[in-house]
Amino acid sequence: MFGLIDKLEKEECLEREEWITLLSAYGDEKLRDYAAQKARTVAQGVFGTDIYVRGLIEFSNYCKNDCYYCGIRRSNLGADRYRLSMEDILACCEEGWVLGFRTFVLQGGEDGFYRDEWYEELIREIKRKYPACAITLSVGERTTETYRRWYEAGADRYLLRHETADDAHYRTMHPEEMSPVHRKECLYALKEIGYQVGCGFMVGSPGQGSEQLAQDMEFIHELKPHMVGIGPFVPAAGTPFAKETQGSLELTLFMLSLLRLQEKRVLLPATTALGTIHPLGREMGIQAGANVVMPNLSPVPVRKKYALYDHKICTGEEAAECRGCLNRRMESIGYRIVTDRGDSPYCCERP
Ligand code: SAM
Ligand code: FES
Image 1 (cartoon, rainbow, N blue to C red):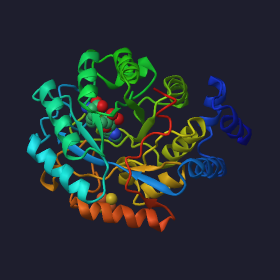
Image 2: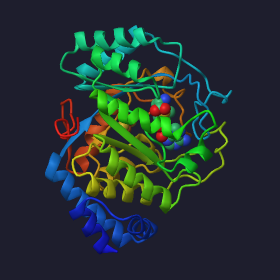
Image 3: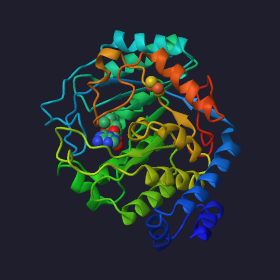
């Protein structure tokens, strides 16, 4: 089994059967530690002890989609909906800029309220005020034309988790109107346009096994994204998956290590969901090979409302407190958050 980790480190891919064997063995603590130690060494070889930080602005929890796992799905009548205005978002950016954030992630549900032109104006305005910042969009599936307009307006990066690379599995987590094929096509289109692209998946989503995770690793190997966002599935009240079992901390950490060994220079966040299922989840994520953290810059009064899942952390803290907290957390394990756009080292190689 240890030999498979050595092989992954060397060859940067495994056969399907090898993946399944390796992933099925995640319960072995020594194996996880072996992978984590190697992954940490690889990450430090690329990024040293620098941790990139992104300011997450969750600007709308309205969504036209109905994903079975997601707390802001359109059918969840218990969700307390909100939208931020352009002024609200710019105020978040100003606060973030002063705190040393050089990347702003604009994330929201697929909310038709905001027109394409509104995004263009927002992107231009952020870039006019903070020319040295990077803008990441995370607003779901759109047309290639729309993606192109936003890129031309100045957006740099796009996060669109593929959720699962197994199409049959995808269909068990989404209503029929959502297409796994289209989601993957969006990722290729975004890359083609020139965005730094992030895909990703939840670990422990209902119906996921080693076979599905093996397919995720293969899909990522093929797409060659600049970033990969993974975190545990956490049940959300008011969704069909509310009573399902939460994803495992150990498996999420193992997946982070394997991703780092396969995609050596990829940007890999230790996510809020990881911090939600364990008080030291984000620290453990960094120690397993991650190199990015994404604290919340959204205004405190709306934080709780962006409830993708239950018991989400950091919903009561001001941006400055959150930033200070993360600084201390990273320092406690020998890393430091840097004031930097934190572009992908693959930028020139993975256009
Ligand atoms: N609408 C955009 C999109 O579809 O990419 C961005 C927002 S979406 C809510 C962001 C991510 O949250 C999803 O890609 C999904 O992986 C994650 N997510 C949703 N529900 C979750 C849950 N119950 N547990 C963990 N992660 C969840
Ligand atoms: Fe948000 Fe600790 S990171 S309060």
